[in-house]
Structure formats: structure tokens, C-alpha cells
Length: 235
Image 1 (cartoon, rainbow, N blue to C red):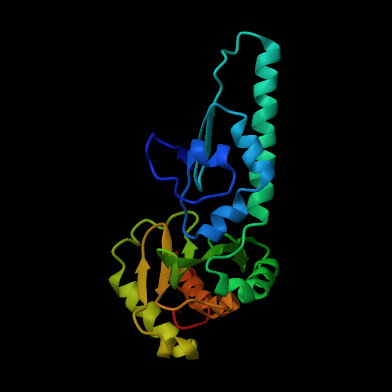
Image 2: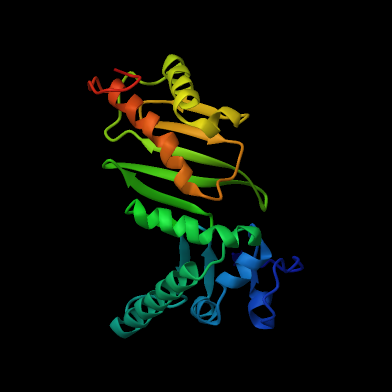
């Protein structure tokens, strides 16, 4: 969301003429944009003379200098109201696309079981397995979900793990051996670096708990790269 330039097309239309006249809106899906722009959020945004908002941050400006304590206090109250409205809108955001709605219970359940959190808007979750943090993220091309990325951050980073072609080949072999459904996955891309081990699947996971089977060999590889000795294919 940004200020709309003169003679520029409106973009996503909220039905609020004053709001649509001020701002240019776009997003992955119109339905998500409209669901996010609740009346409370629109009211909080229009309190500022200049606003820019995206997935990462909101930037707002006041037209009045902060020389007066009461003016500054009002501005901070408006910022707080905006933060609260953004949080509420984010919590109510539907998944993209609407066809993923039926997958939400499975995603929420896996996030809870793994002690993590779910971002419904991008259908991305973070969790923990055997004390290690991981991420399962849906990949999009435009509005269409086209794949899934399972990543295991290496914390701390493992120096010397970069360019791990041999390690990636070993991981691929372990996945084919240990994860029955992975043998049928085409177009999977594996990468091993100093800061992360990742598997990119050309399939969308309706049941993200299936990622647990992929993460086990990734954890084993991480331990092997650290020189830890445990049972398994990397012993």
C-alpha cells in the first residue's frame, strides 16, 4: 500500500471512496488484501498524512513537528492504534489461495505440536524438532501455490559446509532411503550451506507434518557436519 499518484488506477478497491482515492493497493490476491484492510485498520491508516505499508513494515509520517509534548503523545497513540490494528488484521488473514482453507487445521496443529508459530497469510510456519528450529514455507508464483520449502537453519553456522555438493547428494540418498513418499517427488532441489540446509519441493504440502520425515535426515546431516557421532546413515 502506498499513496496513489494522480491519474493512477486505483488497484484493489475497498469500496471506501476516500480511502481508495488516497491509496494504491495490491497484493497476491484481492481477497487477502480486502480481508486485511479491516475498518479499524483503514481508520488507523488514514490518521496519518503519509503512509506506506507492506508485508515487512509500515512507514507513517506526521505533518506536525514534535516540538510539543502533547502533539508527540497524540502521534504515538496513533502509531500504537495502527500497530494493534495491523496485529488484529494479520491474525484474521485468510490463507492464499482460498483452496488452502481446508488445510489450515493441519498447519495449525503441526505448528502447535512443534512449539512454533504459523503465519496464515503466506502459509509459513516455524517450529522446533529435537531442539533445532526449522521452517516450512509455501512457495508461490503470483497467486498460485507451486511448491514447499523446508529449511533447517544451522545455528551457529558451520564453516566449511558451503558448496556442499557431496553433502547434498548424501542427503538426497538418505531421503530416498528413509522417506517413502520422497521417491515419487520430482524436481526437488537440495542445498547445503554454512548457514542452512534446505529442501525445495515442487509440491504443496497440505499436511505439513510430512516435513518431519524430511527434517530427520537433515538433522542427521547437520550433526555429521558438526562432527557429532550418532547412529544413522551419517555415522
